[in-house]
Image 1 (cartoon, rainbow, N blue to C red):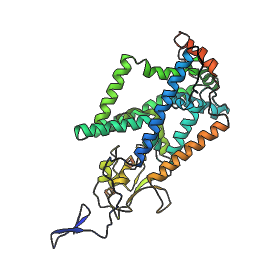
Image 2 (cartoon, rainbow, N blue to C red; image 1 turned 90 degrees about the vertical axis):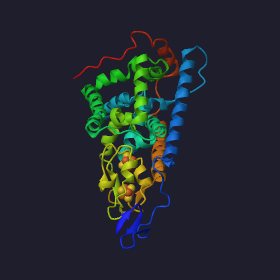
Image 3 (cartoon, protein in one colour; image 1 turned 30 degrees about the horizontal axis):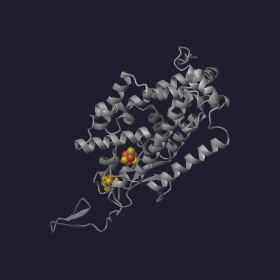
Length: 365
Ligand code: SF4
Ligand code: SF4
């Protein structure tokens, strides 16, 4: 008897009949079809666009002399991960919480926490850059009929680049003393570093345009090219996920060996041949579990909890619950809003292009 595509080929009869002993999952999805996680990602992406527009309007109003009618959105500080990492080092060493961009620390803490709990889920569920990257490779798949895989000998070392970039930043930050970090976080440059980040998009240089174009084009062909090879933030989340209590778990007794899971995995992880996926590359996207045709075979599970598994609704609910809880707690305890007033912000904006607003020199210990 041979098992083939969820049917049993009875050699004696040489016919295909349904294999009733291996019930199929009614909710099985086609690979890369739109699911709950994608709705979640879309919601976060649109919220991020909204925050960006609000910040743009705020900066525009603060650049003039009129009344500022919008609030500066703290969420924009999510794009300052290096400052956030410095802030966390300072906080651990001295107990001082960065008051200039406090939301940056909260958002890095949130990303790290959910990635620790649910397998780098910040990248697979929340990060707007990851979402955009995913849309690009799906668009490329639609346009060219497939995505392309680099040969293993090239793919593997390229994946290491994000860890090297992360290591570079970590070495610099950990080489800085607490007074130096404090000096950086209170410098005129850091106080308007969010505007510098905005200028990255609104005053794009030719080099920036070329780099972004290359990244966009490569993302059309290679799945999650930016996240896969270059994003140090994702590298950090992946290392945290190594300590995660959750993991994709396969039941070899009910697995029919169809390989749908490995084919659906955007990171080409060998799901069909492993009992557990512990790789720091796994972003908890659950595409593998969505396409698996064999019931009770593949699931995101917490170690030692037997049959209890995480579905998309549970993961999404926990992520948004943790986000609300952390932001609310930070808000009511004064760890969310910047201490830079509108008045000071406006004054700093006047000098943003002057030579003294440069990146402070980093002094190594
Ligand atoms: S192993 Fe599954 S959950 Fe992990 S990245 Fe691959 S498809 Fe997503
Ligand atoms: S675990 Fe993977 S190989 Fe096994 S049945 Fe499910 S999709 Fe197919």
